[in-house]
Length: 610
Image 1 (tube, helix red, strand yellow):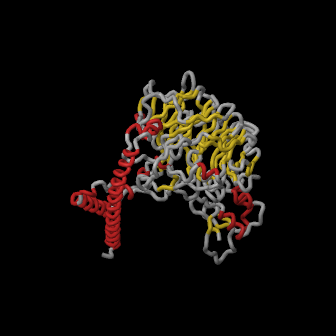
Image 2 (image 1 turned 60 degrees about the vertical axis):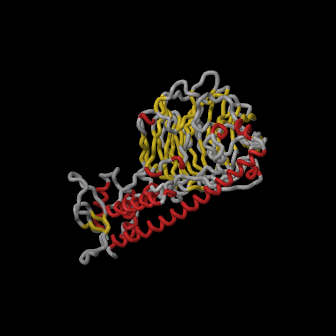
Image 3 (image 1 turned 90 degrees about the vertical axis):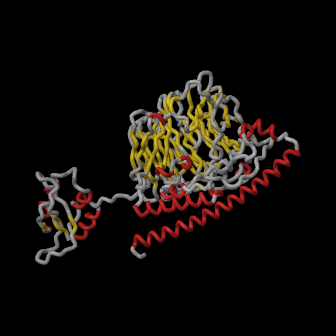
């Protein structure tokens, strides 16, 4: 049953509307339409209602438009009235907002490279930020510790071993001190950065990989296998390297007929997808050297496009339409005939660079030359790509860096951090989910009591002073739904295992507390292993010998007697450390049980049960 809405929409020209009613009208026939002044209209008054609708062509609901050509009845009106309801999709990322840091927390006076190449020009990890810069007589990039903000001196040392401009850089996901670079000099170089950053210009790489006949514009590490690196050049060749032995594992030289725009591994590194200048997106198995699936004319525009793998195996692409409008598309590798979703953004001419967070299924899209960052959420329900918001600033961006999840501040609900490159500056931009992190008076009282108990415990038991009791307070602010377990710095397998056919998912870590690696194996320096392990060296090896491979090779020349003595002392020290760790774990478990009992008692007090 339909009743009239007694509240007019405009005092001058009230707009006709429909409202639904569950009541009955005993002395009238069933009513179908209602005006905005509270009158009840019989089916005979529908013609008058239609004439009034013609006066509001731009405001009429879609359901009314289709109802004109149908028989007006109560059942069909009920169906169309349902379409008037505006459904708001629930998402915890709807209110994500971006906030640039203050000027004193930026990296100023950096001469960002002006080379014409659609690269990000910036790479970030939890320790360093690397930026490709202008250099005379070759190519160079600058590596800065994250805490070294402010104005950067012009004489600050750079990594300057290439003889041509650097086109792409990428940090190793399994070693925060190893970075690879590709250049116009047709070489790929792998560098080892000292613990505290550069103090002198770095000109000697650890590894030089030569195999391309033209400039190398794409560098990307394998997500799960140690020391496996992929490079793609303007010779349309993709090469997969074993960096630890400098050998060429796979050479794919007949799969791309034209320039390769980008390459992206899937989550376990068994496949990668590529976007090519021939407007095709290909899914390739590098170990078999075959194209698993291919979509021709994924985007019909002639300008550069990009393709990345998502966590569920689907492919997200950015490109241009035939009318040079920028587009986003989502593809199912099982059926590449038609896209699952296709959206047009605008008519700008800058290439779109997508950044994907597999933990939240949020894609951030940054256009070169734009001054905005758009972000979308990918879901399993139609329309699959949901626009969330846009971060807008004044200055255009020349490049963009992306911080891995383990480098974010979880206590501030930070879910992403970008490093925006200006002409002479690198500006961090923090993406935050607004959350209330306040406690009631009872919770504050409980926390204060627990802190006092812990302090007394530490005073009475000096062996427990190393316990970080503040971790309890921080865990109370941890948002489990925002920070699921994420990929850690440990490699899931070795390069030889991956070549043998093994496939492994990334080793996940929790971000609730500071990540502490498990007991590491001893470092083995062999003739073929040219890179250090990402794992820390034994506690007795400190100083420069823990940083540079040359010093490590010298340490292997120690006499056998001294080595055995050191190993004996190290074994005793390790046993003492293990015993202390076991006692600390027991104490933490006991305190956790005590906290749980106190929380249960507090809940009974608040509910009135006690």
